[in-house]
Image (spheres, rainbow, N blue to C red):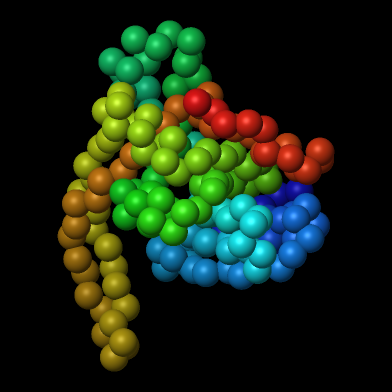
Length: 173
């Protein structure tokens, strides 16, 4: 199955979670509809924060060569990143899993607190100068330049969600 955009990825995960956990989930949009909080109607079930990615962070090895030199078993050179605002939101809302979803329908998960702790411990943090284009309520537009802090983690430390067996493997760290 190919997930061509964030909406198809969200629908896919909502269907999977409904079948697996036997309850309904509410979808809450963040980041201009690029991220979704999948909140269960039954509070004893896990909640998910979905991030659709078109590709891996291919420059992980370029951004963090020292980390990879100190950890030679992590040779893939690929990683994922999430902005600080989203990661702290996950922790504040007690979200159980951050899910990185790729077009080939592969889903990789990690607990938000583990992600944050690891990125801070190994200084896998970068500042990006970004220009964001905002639509204002009156129909006009505004361009704003911001510094965005992102936390990164190597691909090998994420857990691949096993959809066929209906489980998420244990903690990654």
